[in-house]
Length: 292
Image (cartoon, rainbow, N blue to C red; front, side, top):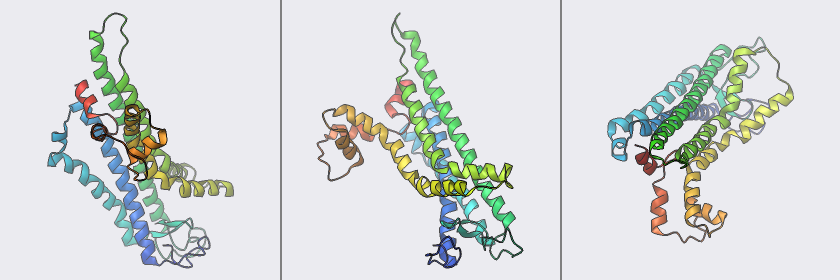
């Protein structure tokens, strides 16, 4: 996607300005969309427990649109304006993103042909700051969700007999799922948060070659694993439930069954399929109804 000859870091590039602009637009749109959608999901999980929403209530059009439309609107606000200022250019020799061109116009007397140093820095910091804010909101609402589940379970303590152990099963499960949920957002994008604080507090500081390589390798290796981290978050509860139901199967066979991989030997009953299909990421519907 990087234009041919745009950078000595991308000697094999064969793209054009148009392909570079398209890739940069998709990158910014997807990052801001994901940050907004992930934050909305955290709020939704808390509202389900706090307000006792059912599937029928969640299916109402006004509730659905209130969580589906904002990510698209916010992502458009982030991704469209840079199109008019030529800000989608080669970035670190890896891809096309918010950057100026040529790459050394910030250090020489050469005028920037596309984008500007100030404009790109502002756009990047707004995007990174928004993503960081989203991560903070996600953690906050996950904590509120855990607290809501804990309070609901604590209400049943009054009915316990003397010496009977308190039940905090749902609190424990929700807490660990909340950690996975937050980490799936934090880990892939943590390097962008490093860029954000560097630009704000240490812009004039020099970064060693080793530091540059660490950042580049992190972006190349870890950031693309965003989907894998989310898959772990969503499939782990189903795997645990199914594993308990068919303890005689191996771990790999259970994992293949949950993921629906065709070459695995599947002996799942319809009852098992139904029971695992209704599990929700942070807390199951049955657990929610139990807590209310």
